[in-house]
Length: 148
Figure 1 (cartoon, helix red, strand yellow):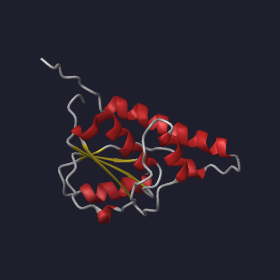
Figure 2: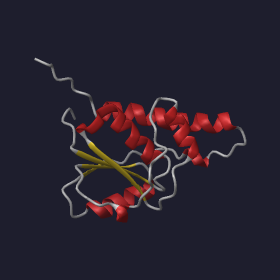
Figure 3: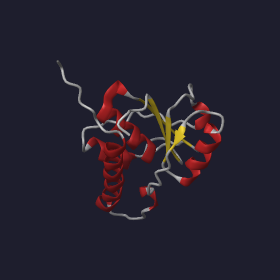
């Protein structure tokens, strides 16, 4: 797993919470060493709680434009990572005729938490953000190259 893929696609149900977070995290950790994109089965605009918890760690996803699998301009990816069961099904369909690896990371949808308390909601989103960060750090190890 030390070899980094050249192109990664994160996918979730709406491309509004989990996949934009994962996209932002991988870009933050690896910059332009890896082409990263994200999609949803039924895209809706980026979730405000997602924007808030990513901003807490210095990553701005407020300009994220949600898109679907059908909106992809390029379908060449080395790795597709679905984050929801629904996205897993679409990813398998999409990659059926591609030489592409699919890794299913079933990730909790924090929008399922029903609370009037903003801090409770933010905590649920932070947990998802932090879990994705840890998973991404393990899967996409940063290899330092010496300057000599």
